[in-house]
Length: 181
Ligand code: IMP
Ligand code: MG
Image (cartoon, rainbow, N blue to C red):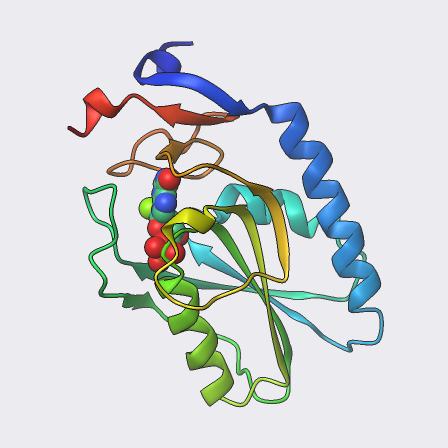
């Protein structure tokens, strides 16, 4: 596929993604059995593809909402400054919340979101991230549900971008460093 021309290897295939997403959905369903109206928050834009697949494996009376944050821009490293670009529509007070994210790298984005949600009075805040890059961590942040742990390489596809490109790749691939160096 032409879209793959800038990638150097496939890290996680579409089949592996779909199997793992189903497992995550089942696990979350079991853990939130007693929750009345859990709120699933998609962190735009990277988590959108994962989110759409995940919620169809969660057998709960859930409500969805969307949050927009950014910290990268046209770079492969965090600027260290997280910006809220689009806020939620739903109130958080007293709700069980699951934040759905594409990847935890430095952890700064999720720390910012989690703190914000707790300040607004959420009853519980859980983090579900498709990918985790523990080597990049700059703050103490642990995800509750993680799809795959990956090495410290910059990846694209299945929602993840570099400078807004490659989100539509069906698998998770390592981007050729030539593209950004
Ligand atoms: P953090 O704040 O450093 O944890 O970064 C989280 C955000 O950075 C994610 O929501 C992604 O948008 C972006 N990001 C981090 N690593 C990668 C990567 O390897 N590929 C694409 N985006 C990434
Ligand atoms: Mg991004």
